[in-house]
Image (cartoon, rainbow, N blue to C red; front, side, top):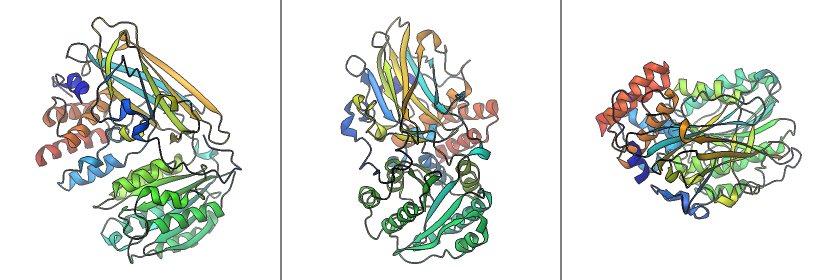
Length: 481
């Protein structure tokens, strides 16, 4: 944590690509690259000397569940568990406004700003895909795997899920198909793959979902993948959507064991979205299932949040823009003395894995942005190029690899973070610092009061309700902690 401590300590100034579509047998990898495969980037809080660790490599991640669940706990007057706080998911919960590419690849945006502390700066690497045209998207096969165990009886769990499913069924296009699997002590196929022309049948199936028994998430997910594989359409987007509190207590309860059971059915062209609900939430299980199942993890606790996920986000992002996407940032050791990547600890990769297309990366959909922040210590008199950032991905259907790059020079840095720089960059720094305060009880010299002041100012500047909510959460955290 040393590097960012130095970077932000004095900042409390005024204001704030898949296998071929016909290859259905391709297995899900056993796991993401382990921490041991990237020792220079995964040690939490480690400052990396560019003389020995010039390159930072990580799999892209569009998860936001960590921020969603922290929001829920803070609103209830509880401090989130430190292990459930992932700074990159806080940052990636906010709009970025990066320019979109003209094709189906990525734009790469690199910027940053100097800090008051001598020779320190923050760098931001932003990656953006092109938004989807909903009218021209391919049809979708969606298999919903719904937890109906006893713990889902809590208000705001199964009732929220059912309401969201009813809304989604009404939003999908005629060419789409939906199947529903429920699970408690065992899994049950509630509705086999049904075309949206039979919406009434699907609404009736949703109405039949009722709470019972314990939580055999393993059986539910296995049955869901079996149904998705049985009904697989090569010309469609095929996805399994798990809706659960993640509190598995029957059958296998560890994510690796569950993935081992489903990997023969979970071809690389069947992606997973895990949607978490509930006051008590199995964060690690749901996050790791999503990360290792070629998907994403989100968390919802209100009707409005569920509407955003199922009505706005899901239909618009059913297709993929990139499979196994990875980022690599190369620092210039003559200009940068040391750096630290904020978050992404469980997404780190070894340098040589970047162009190894057998190594699993992250899946990114249309219109998604991915942001990574680096705290850097500059060498005295640093000039010229500071770093270059490259994203590598595979085209979803053909597995053809592609890359895009951008770089940042010393002269490109803003003179001071909180003055004259992008409001979105400032929001990202506030979100990351808030996450690190929640996780480590440190905000790099910025107290919650200062963070809240920055967030309040930025909410006014951006007129963004999400930033206003962030300001409120920081105030709430200050009153709790």
